[in-house]
Length: 518
Ligand code: SF4
Image 1 (cartoon, protein in one colour):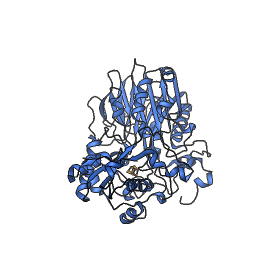
Image 2 (cartoon, rainbow, N blue to C red):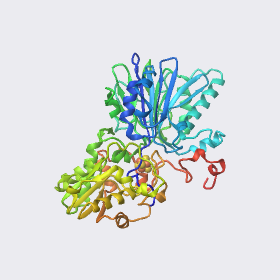
Image 3 (tube, rainbow, N blue to C red):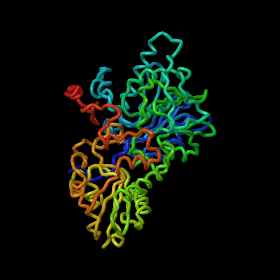
Image 4 (tube, protein in one colour):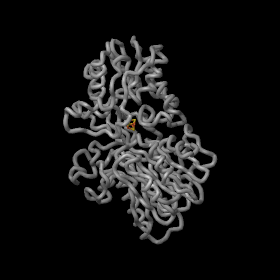
């Protein structure tokens, strides 16, 4: 519990964007799309743009606005592109691990952007005989897998057909667009990249929403669990793929549908067609429940629900489950505010403001100096003293991960004169680490891993603490039976994880990668 104070909620893990729009110069559109997805990752940004004959990649460390200026965007000419914003979950935060990843192999050049986290990264690396450092992130490994398949396939005599894909039933909760085939089909005209994907994707385990492009086509992939979101939009002249629907809105694209778990969507001059390379038994929708709680933007739509409304409902149910007498309900900016609104509405206690967030905080960092680290919460939040002094506060937040930020915030509210502080959390205790695309640290860093709610309350210094139940959280989504991952709340991991999986698994020496537990 002596960790950095900057984390109040689980950290995001990448946004992806793709566009195919013949006749348009798409780099400025990719910039806008990535800007709308900036909340999903602030470490690096990049895009790969094709004009049909060359695929050019620009990527760098920093925010979208730091990596791209008008000059750089103007230099990226083409009608086909993918883009990426990164927060690292496997692989360190470095330029090499910035995305899109690029490879040229077997006469095909391609780029790939990845949101999620593979769970069999080390097994794949060992199977491929890769030495430490040959691929430094799971996304790099995906690119390498595809590249090797392209090389292998190019060395073979030409084959007439691609094997037909197994069939899976369509998800009842994600309606398909009548204009975009999504029923089980064989892969479309077998370009080399698509053929390679048919071979490679079934070997991958874990969470991966991908955008890929070669010189002439855009491909979207959602893993068979659909851990991370990916949606399709329609422009007059073409198609857009994005992690979240607000990135469609900003580009003027109309939302068509979410890609289904286990779906591969290929977009090119012949149109837009999907296929499924996984057997039906591998497809089991388990969208990350924390996309609803915190990760995705409130104006995003998932499983057909706008998330702001779902978060307000979480607060309403929290008020029913954990009432307490108080003078004012406040939300921790920004992610606790919709649930605070719901709590206030259902309890009848006035909604107010007690904390002001510095909106220019940008990317946070872990300062090695503990005195500077202690300033972390004050860099981000400052109390409104007149609104707080002498009052009984209900403070609503979306989650508590390490607890250090929450503890510092409670101390700050007490200093500002709060008479009572009742903390209400719009999700259950976060007890288990995420291996599907969030950086939550090890289990030992999670405050709820071994402590009961009363003990957490004592540690945080609040007068009372209560969490929303899992059933109520799922009910608040509006689609309780739709299929969710709740592993960080229950320890029930829908895809097995290896005990030694860590962020730097590919950068460790080989003995550590093949060590105990295997
Ligand atoms: Fe989301 Fe938690 Fe599952 Fe990770 S473990 S995908 S944060 S629900």
